[in-house]
Length: 572
Image (cartoon, rainbow, N blue to C red; front, side, top):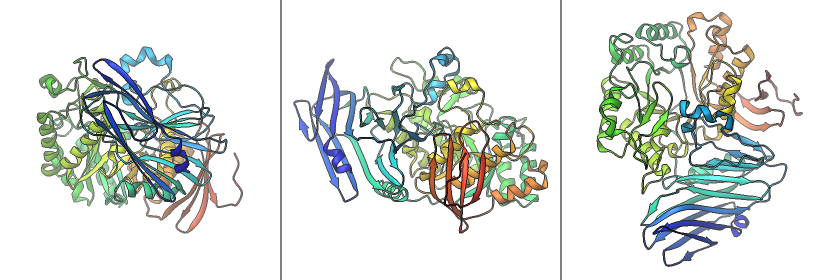
């Protein structure tokens, strides 16, 4: 299939030299007075690899660069769209659906809340029509059990955006590299295309990338965020730790989330009222119970109230107008650090050295990582900056464990042990109605469930999937019992890092029993996932040699059920 599709290929390249814009349209190798394009094609019986290198003869400023392929879509096909970063909604679309984007009604609030900073809204134009889709790094067209897969083998020279236009019957693979200068060989595209069943295409893709299966193990754990949020302290943490240990709960890791530090960015300044004995003591107590100790940081940002921001503004990333790069509205608003600066890297390395070697934590949850690549530099794309940042983090952390979050996934492949693959769950089902006008990265239990299903194929290949937490508690929660059971089911089926934030001292006997079932070891294999237009997703799976079928409603309606496998499809 891809050999025929590549026969229709055309390369579109627009660039500037001395304020004059040029356009080139070609299908194969090409040369003019400014550059040479070298194309390397490799075809096997079921996959193709295409590499395109631009060799400039002088310095060029890229305006746009894309490959256009012809694909005749049919009504039975579905299109998978991988969102820009961890929190961005990612799913299979029916070909007559429309992607969500920022509503024009949200415009007055964008300056206040900076919702547009969390996604791709500043560098990717949304075509707000049915049948127009775009995703990042990899994607596929699926017809029943046949997957036609396209993936980038590297994002080091720019994010790869896969656009599908149903009415125009075309797939456009775009390199996000606008305004980048090149004066040496530029490896523009390194694409892998394959056709086959689900397991085969994803196994082959990561083998082609030379990404080994993660060495880290599946884990169960407790994290402080989704019950206490920033209102944590030493007493609360030790209370929950002791409860889990005393009741002999099957967990592997106990994680301290945001709230231990004085301000974001001042990671080694511990709040003396909340944690009078410091974070080293907490790690020691966790280890005494036989668990791994985890802790949360956002290493690439600092908030306006922080000492780092006040004293080191020369460390803050600046845009092409020399303005400080605001990365979001959380806390007292926060800014991105410029990791191109040696002193910034030295500071971050020092923080990790203290946290991992002195305090003794085993895992770091690293959040809001997208901020590091909000703006490109003259010679580096956002994708290259993000890839280099992830390599830097791996270097800093060494053999300890990384849980990535709020990060573009492609640059994380093979570099993090665990990764969040969806947005934050909320204490209700789908947040307030007006929040649907805002960013695709918003807090939403419903969207988190959808992402766990949509990005299921990354689990055990790119890293171990973190689908976020489940809840069983009755206090400090607005979810119905069926909704809680839905979250727990999806997390267990599609993730292998299973967290809760509940205070289990308040559990009933029934809740303890369900907790133990969720945290128990079991062999799960997903046979097939079928989405339907009414919002129902059907999951056929095998658990401990028993074949079952489940239905989940990815709308605001409350439907969830699991039955023994039947040959007929369960109906709404």
